Image (cartoon, rainbow, N blue to C red; front, side, top):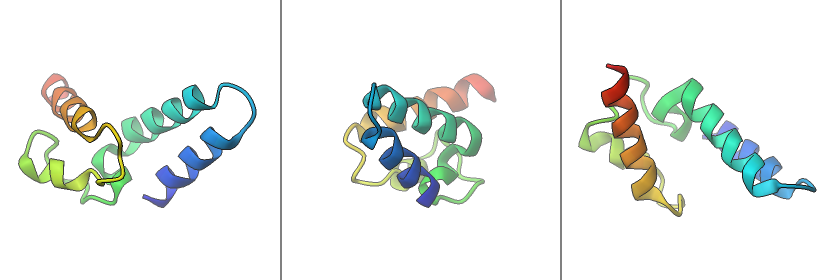
Length: 77
């Protein structure tokens, strides 16, 4: 979770296209670490209800993140 927070903070505070940079940083960290980027156990199935509990409430589009994790899981298993 610390890596995600740091990447997003750097992404949104630099000069330039900061929203895109932060988005890409989050996507890359998510692709690399899965739900573990939120501090979740690495073996949490993204399609489960437990996965939804892993996504922090401070994520503005929380439902979108949960749905993306479920779709990614379905496409890669």
